[in-house]
Amino acid sequence: MALQRVMHVEDDESIRAVAEIALIDVAGFDLLSCDSGQSALAQVEAFSPQLILLDVMMPQMDGLQTLAALRQLPKLAQVPVVFMTAKIQQVEKQQYLDAGAIAVIDKPFDPMLLGETLTTLYQAYQADSIQHLS
Image (cartoon, rainbow, N blue to C red):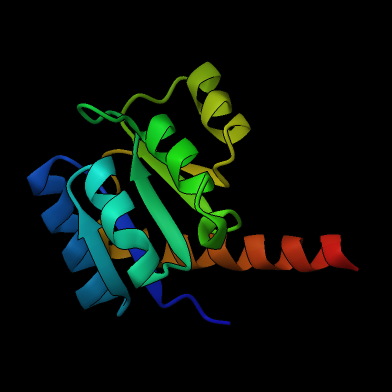
């Protein structure tokens, strides 16, 4: 199944705006853009994303806390999550992967390639999931 529905959680309005252009206009995705973890949790089940793009550094509820809360929702337990952060030391990157993310994308990101990158990660995740079932 092709990637179509992406939820993006990012508190920085300018980054959200660039990501919206990258993911809607360039990549052609259906996008739910949220400005906080709380907002994401309130809207995610109705949107039913195929992939979640999650900022790490957010007020009130950071990316790791948001991921933990999302994983408590049965419909979202298996939805792949990609973190996006400017804070990208190897130890921290490993922490995000250990928490259940399938990848970590560095900020600043290339808006022209963001959709393609997410599609590639999603396809790899799907292929890996199918392999584990057989």
